Amino acid sequence: MSTYTKILYQIIFSTKDRVKTLTEEKQPTLYKYIWGILKNNKCHLYRINGMEDHIHILTHLHPTVALADLIKDIKLSTSQMIKEEKAFPLFNGWQIGYGAFTYSIDSKEKLIEYIKNQKEHHRNVSFAEEYKNILEEFNIEFDEKYLV
Image 1 (cartoon, helix red, strand yellow):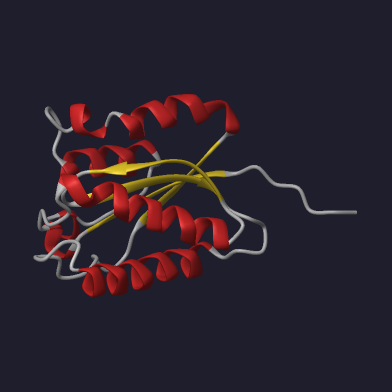
Image 2 (cartoon, one colour):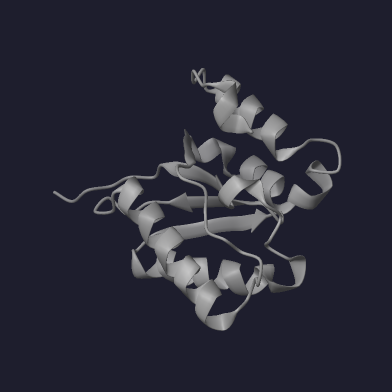
């Protein structure tokens, strides 16, 4: 018997201190690099997008991949790439921690659209508000001081 899974993860993390360093013109390069990391880990990317201070990734994790290891790989590899290529000159690293939320496959199209439309979404909602809303939606207890 084989292992079969189809668990969607929305992974969210921000720049250190939520500083807006991920300039829009270089974001596609960063996203392609992250896509490569996911492919190397046998994960399927459904959508990636973000803003100057954070990223959303919608992916399916391969059953052999541990979530924490994947995110560590993404953060370390992208930090090195950003530094070497000087892609975002003011980038000072990623925040400690991340958000990872699971969804049923029925939510896939809605999540793809949500992530695709981040720039429009954030005209009205700050990252802190967005993140707090997601945490509340999933009934996750949190300390407000870590959302600043």
